[in-house]
Length: 238
Image (tube, rainbow, N blue to C red; front, side, top):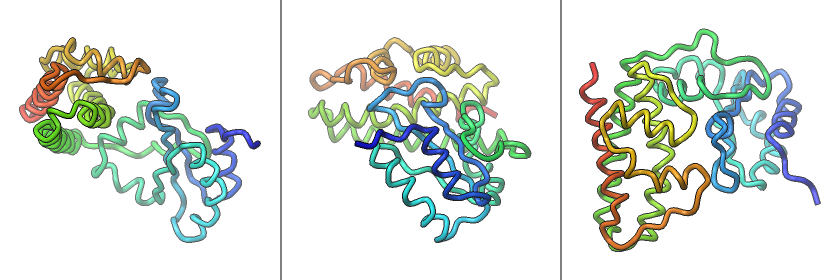
């Protein structure tokens, strides 16, 4: 039986498949931050090529087949020109990747790539408000269905933690890698009680599955309040 591909063996396979067409292959997300939880967290990769055409997809197919069979998502794929032109569209993601990444193949993609603070603030505000509205909608629909509501909360947590890292960057504060330290730092800055999110943080850090109690479990109102307070904080930033 073939062994599961590691991130390094995947990188080698991609580099061999693409040859000089590969510009950069980068590992980012929890695996690069050191917060990866096996069987829960994704192994996230970014692939930058000189151009992206059918020949690239055909060349990648064997490596991606093995990688995806092991439970990993396909990489995000940019051309080099798209990568350099898109910092204004994805400032949250760019700065998160910039801080926590590992170059797997090719050259460093960051020289000359800059994000604008105003673009970052706008994206954070928009995504926080969208998250807040969607969470309220889910809570209204699923308040009496704790199993389904738990899945919604868990599924939204990684995105909220990403927003908290972005808020700390906007404020010029250090950005901790660990979920517990991150929530504590953001709560102190923004002004929401971190204690109410302890079960969610514990789960995200590799602890037991999140299990909500009966309708009105205090975690959910605490989580909604934290998202709302963070959105209001960002809205007030100049």
